[in-house]
Length: 276
Image (cartoon, rainbow, N blue to C red; front, side):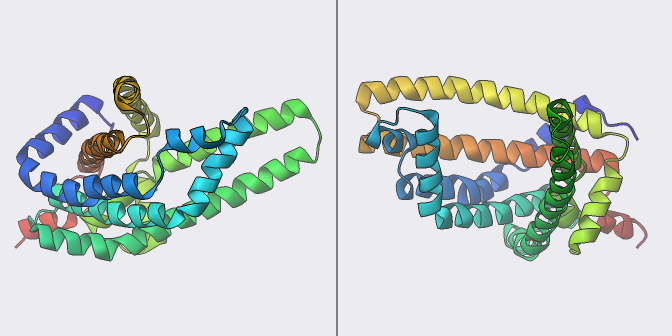
């Protein structure tokens, strides 16, 4: 089946409209609140950069690296909480059994480790394959060949990520918990539609980027007016980042659910229910 972007977008918006009340609750708990909390636990990027007034990009990157080294546990905790919410929202949108919020959260908790393990396996596999190829090419000392190989490796990595992009949907909707089976299933479902899915994600990403730039400009102007490092600005930043993040998460999850519905069809539960 060929993937249709317009149909996927309409399905995604339809699912959001039909479940908006419960999605507000789950997205608020698992996306908005963690982002808001992180804004108070982690120093604002602007403040971090202003401390030593770095004169070069290298110094700035070093400060960012140091920030992640100091607050890794915050980002890890956020990833854990948001991933559980991610899977729970998918279950709420597509599970034919119409789970309650509590049941969806149980699906999220059960599916987190397989979901995480699947992506770890994917990253390890990509790292090994690309690392070995680039190492061999680097031994040739041919600059042009190294550049071509690096570009090809980047394309391959993007291709693999697109092929495995339905991993959370496979976990939440099909209730598959073997990491290798999850990746194989996502690879199979997206067969023949990788380029279309990539184009769809690119369009969504461009829209998100434009919105983020506009919001960033507004926030920058507001920061100049009330002080970029003030408590009020920190609170506003946290609220805005949390709200934007929650909306983006819900929309992206709905898009994944719509893509899965279009390419994989009804969930296994729905099919078995039809024969009862």
